[in-house]
Image 1 (cartoon, one colour):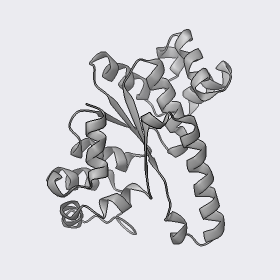
Image 2: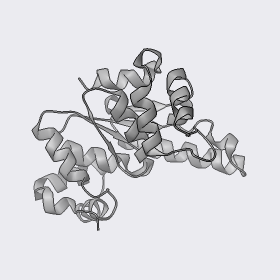
Image 3: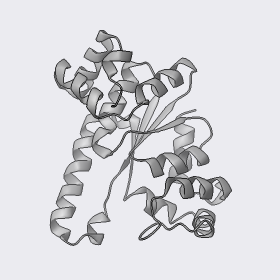
Image 4: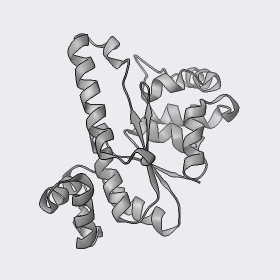
Length: 201
């Protein structure tokens, strides 16, 4: 069962989370108790205590590749785009320097069966998340991480050597992404991704 923010965060910090999210203290407690991944609060607290910045990302593949690429920040997956504001609120309440990476999903609808509906859903979900994040604390990718990674030639080559892909079978494998990012050259990595490391120094 996910650890509760109430177990690790003082009550005044829970109130900060509620204020950040514009919700009640009870709802903030409930969100943190049931939504954030196990170990998230502990990892943020440890990073803050060591003076390390935290980069919040949506999922495990994002965390795998960016941990290997970026030198400095602790990269933590929150478990989905909709949880980035909750993760940011907890990081803020615990005194961590943090930044969030949001998939804009601008072209994801093109890959869906019901394109019109998917496009509308993607726009709404991105707008809802960005509305809750301070502009200086978030970077919104035009589409998704895979679209950025497709612009990283040495990563794509390394991923293929490890039997991975950016789409279809073998896609979104955290171990393969991490191995490929460790082998790839930072020199040809997308500037948008490298900039995340500079923001958090």
